[in-house]
Image 1 (tube, rainbow, N blue to C red):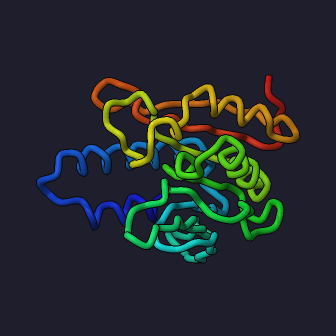
Image 2: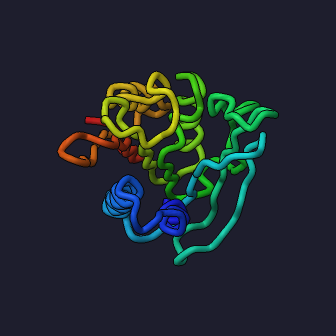
Length: 198
């Protein structure tokens, strides 16, 4: 997620109000993730990119906490138009069970298209994380569309609760939000493994 903020900073034009608002929101989400997890442990960051057709691991070191990163690539059609941001192939993260302490993802799940694939991401994040997961997604009802996908693919807070409730082992979970312009702009799912939901 920190990579996404840093990458986004380099693309934001100084005069773009939308770009500045989006960057400020991404920073708030990063702060929420940092507050959710403890200060120690490895983190797998799952991001989104264009122009490829496979799930590709990209390992990197960043401030001694980011132990790995996966970039989910989407395919584009021959004429350059996005093919509705669908991810191709079966979704499975290329890591062992519990290989990382934490897994985080921001603005990825809505690109996966359908509920089965979206839950697949949540399930895989929970599989590779020992301590917990943090997954953020734009609110489909916010007037600014941060995701760049059809609103029908975007999730509601209820969807995140439903996905977390389906996870094996019944971990503790909650859904939070960050507002922008007074309206809930992003929801985030926080799952703590090793503790039963109360």
